[in-house]
Image 1 (cartoon, rainbow over the protein chains, first blue to last red):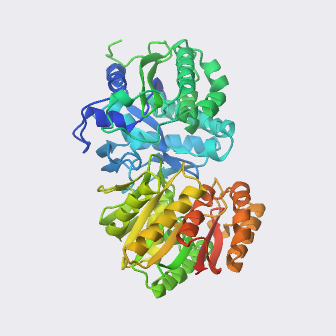
Image 2 (cartoon, rainbow over the protein chains, first blue to last red):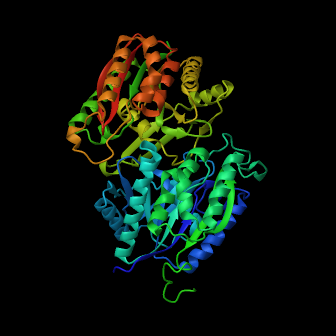
Image 3 (tube, rainbow over the protein chains, first blue to last red):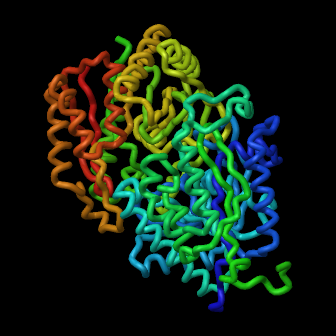
Length: 306
Length: 270
């Protein structure tokens, strides 16, 4: 098999509040809702994903932080309970997922061949991080598509932002080659918030939307500027100003998922579909889609809806 | 005396999971010595501050009475699991939550099944309290708290221990210099990644040995910045807060590399 392709990429942020607001049976905590604009944005993204019919979902999460290399989930089936260490009152989620081992190993090997330090995570007792789980639940709550989970090597924080994101660029290119080599129809999920300054206190109840708004106007303006450019397909311009955005808005895209995804997709200059934007405890979150099939950069599945 | 022992120990799992590797085994031996010293001090409770328990919104204190689980480190998963069995001194923990709130630092307890206990706390507990003979109070590292606030946390914890008649051992869990090897190395030849940071570590440890608190405090800001010290060395701030800013000297049971970063096992003389 060597005709694999990336069919779509999503900016798919991971505030656990979204799972909490939805009240799925897997989550112990119960709510009266909240963060509807973002949850409904994910509902629209779910419909797109359903049409795209991917074989696999790849997610890069900033809450699996590694220092020595880029790590990949490497156990065929992982299950357990993931409790968010920051918001344990909101997120106590019983997860169960299947890993596409062949693709994960291909990504790991390809990235190593391209000069990165990489490692497969083979320990079956490993607790999958809440960022990975939240993004996967919100985009595909059925959990019926295999996944590849990728850690966030902390190079953008340990090195300079630019040096770290160069590594994520290489990781993206390696991911693309691995997908092509293994014949997968893959969807990429960049589990990142935009502006990331947040309030230091939680309202009671946490889903009191009367208390929810952007942390600061400057961060909101930055988010709108980035989203507007992405909606126009001005990818190069976004990456030109990305370091400034990261510095001034404390943007979580620093952790690398956004760069990894765009690098894997070849930095396409195509308009993004904005499914929705909202704040969570003051941080800015956008659910956005780049459909490479509609853009003519990938082919639809046989018998697909497009 | 409320505080009967105080230790600074590394939170890396490497000395525990790969004791057979000489550079890390030396730190494991040092942790063993610290464990014996702690037992000899006969505390009622261990009060543990770990840089690896990251908090963002509030100051968190563990209030679940009994924690039993298996942890796998996010980075060093290939070296196996860290099973743990930890009992919490809930009375002291709850008192600390209330008192830190009164001191102006918003705090709360966490009491949830499967709450992720950090690697540093587990490693410290396994070395210093191997049979779970003593209960612990465990608190977090709020990344927005500075040195002074962290000192306050230590002070308040000790004050509450005194109010409840507890004798406590205080344990600051965290590393020294923070540069590390990002790539695979021959672990048998592990070393401090930066000669400058090695010098800094040795200078700071020497000041601890001499009990030169004034010079230590003077040097800490520059040390934290220039040697990329783990979380700005706030684990020392917590210890000093609990000790009322006083110790007469220290025994360095061990100092060595942890994949390039610095780690030391320090017992403070009170």
